[in-house]
Every structure is written in C-alpha cells, then in structure tokens.
Length: 272
Image 1 (spheres, rainbow, N blue to C red):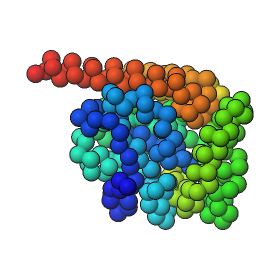
Image 2 (image 1 turned 45 degrees about the horizontal axis):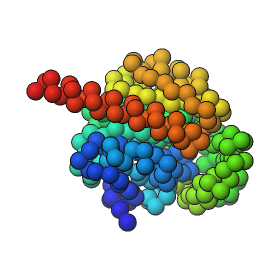
Image 3 (image 1 turned 120 degrees about the horizontal axis):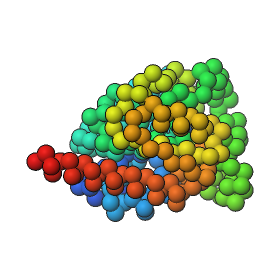
Image 4 (image 1 turned 135 degrees about the vertical axis):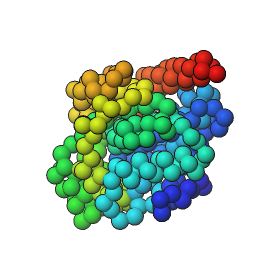
C-alpha cells in the first residue's frame, strides 16, 4: 500500500504508467476517493504517469479532526508531488478537486503545467449549507448524505441504467469518515476564489455537465470569462461527468493535455 506521510497525515496514493512521462495528478470530489478515476486509466496510461490520491479525510488517507481549509488540501497535493520528486505536474480535479486545482493555479502556478477543472466553481454552494451538512454528518453519520447523492451526482437516466456502478460509489461514500467529510465541507464553506481566478496564467480546460445542478454551465462560463485563454467543454452529464460521460471526458482531457505537453516541449526546444 502506497502511503506518503505529508503535513502530519498519511496520504494514500496509487501510480500507473511510466514515471518518465508527464505526470497527471487526479483530485477526487467530496465523498469519493481515488477509485472514481478508474475509467480514465486505460485511456491515459500509455502517454502519462498517472497519480491518484485520496484527499485528506477520504478513502485510505488520514481523517484528522476538522475543520480543514482548501489551502491545507492544496498543500497536501504539493507535499505529494515533493514526496514523488515531481517538480511540475498536470492536474485534473472534479468538484472539490477542481477547487483545489484553482487554488494551486493561483498560489503555486510554478508546480502546475496545465489544469483541468471539471464540474466546479470558484465558490461552490452556500456557506451555511456546508456548515449544516458538516453538523449533520458529525451527528448522524453518512447514510442520509449517501441516500441523496445519486440525484446530485448523476442524471436519473444514467443512474437507472448503471445502478451497480453507482452503488459502488455510494458504498464508498457511506464508508467515508464522517469527521473527514465534515472537515472538507467546512473547507468548501469558507473558500471563495472569485476574486483570484482572474490571475490564473496557465493553460486551463473547464469541463461542465449540461445537467449539473451543483456547479452549472453558467458557473463554467463565468470562470472562462475570468481565466484568460481558458477553454470550455460541455458534456452530456450531471455532476460526476468523468463517470457519466466517460468517453467524452477522456477524449477532452487527453487532447488538452497532449497539446499542452507538446507546446511545452516546443517552447523548451526553442529556448535551448
């Protein structure tokens, strides 16, 4: 089992592919873990070194007492890159992971070569709603949250025809440490990057789901208007688009990352 001791906690991670190739680090959504990226492995492992990890409070990573902050979650990413001796990586994050990616692009752009942020926003949801949810799971555990998750994560049509796969995600959600989940809810409650994302100056692909009730197409368009040179891809999906629209998601991120790596190599060659 791969465990990195970072910032006083244990961070679980898995790697796939050739470590000499460009690295992509994947950051999961709230209540999920590294396994939510299983559908991306086969499409990308030949061209990239893939790093999946469990965000603090999730999966097999430590779940210390909260509250957490997005700055703290981003610091864990940088610590993992340091642990793996990776100076600069491509980053792909969804929902909460996308917020972590935005924070890194603002505060540590020298470590992120290019960024995919999916089904996210610079401010996700309302502070009071997140704090209420944190209080709920600390009191009652994860079952109530898990019961309502399919309607937030997927369209009814997708859930109806993929119940076994979705139920696997729900089992992971139910098994998430309530304190870890609550700590991340508190991080989402407090973080607001709307005044900062206009400073992002690295290549960015924004992915939106056309039926996402959590982070909408309007959120994605607002980000695109603020991040100079950013691109947007709209997929036929709800909130967890990398699973609901797996093939289209894979095509979009592969094309984007390969293009960025090629441009970086050409720029490096010209400078030499």
